[in-house]
Length: 451
Image 1 (cartoon, rainbow, N blue to C red):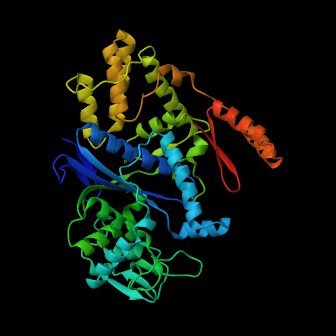
Image 2: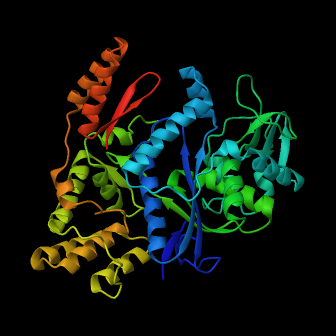
Image 3: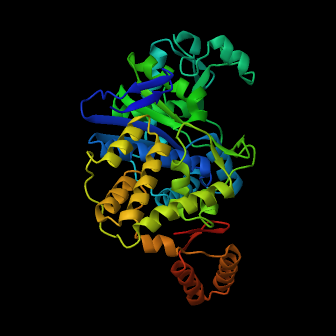
């Protein structure tokens, strides 16, 4: 039986679906104001792996991963660029989709956008106000955290400990510094919606409560996201959802670990982040996916060229074993010793490092015996992780391009477009495409990535 580490219980617990044979899972997705970095890639790949394994285990899965397309960062960035928040969001949603597809991340069953669920958020805020858990403060509506018993259970701290540890900006409109905004009164030039409290827009935390409950019901199986969301975002989701619905919200909370650079957390605020599309200029996308899955999802993942080079060499060893065996994957015989070991690893809180070790043992067997059946099993087990789906020769040949040469061609294409020599511009784009380079024209700059 699959056991998952539940962040709320602080222990591994068996997954017992609320509805037999069915798992409903919600994962906090991207706030689309910039390109995705490696930390986002980890979240995308980890929960793609989770939903793939749940399906491979015979469960029916409803996987929801949201998009935050209205938020302070989006509004600020759009104003800086001189474009609308809608245009900015659409551009970065397209970029996110490209990055996710390159990494072999399957589309979720539902991908709700916050702006399309505002009426549901307004309705939930109204219920919270009616129960005395929310109060008006000028044009805003705030959540009164001290009126919700159990606030702080997910983070494992009392309200007083949280308040002592938080650097909360003084806000005279709040009854307590830890109170958080549910509805923001309209400001000039910002997007706004009607509500009983006047025109405005939702706070960030209420979005996920409303969207998850609308699409999965008031009580569902798994809620996931990055470790950085555990407090305050997921803590606030529990308070909102259980406060409004009067029932348990989620059975199991999953959080993937941080990506680190030189043993320091990677983040945009520290300026030590790496965009997915920049990494994909130097490394095959499957190598990046393999690099992420070699580590346990709850462990820190240390980014370095050496670690990515090691991942490339390791994945090459697996594909080398498959060279000459290009038959399509077949249904897995779970009675096979290697398959049983693989399953045991995955059912122990998605222990992908142990599962990958099984793949290497199988690769050694294929190299020794040149067994078609072992090769097919290797490919099939790898497929449950979204790996080893290509022809071995295709991966081993690999395409390498020089960043300098690509940039020279991009500059030449830009010059051709300025000269209105569109035939030449199209020829250069085609030349890049034939080399496996995909261009994306933004309002101010053209970016690229390897297909």
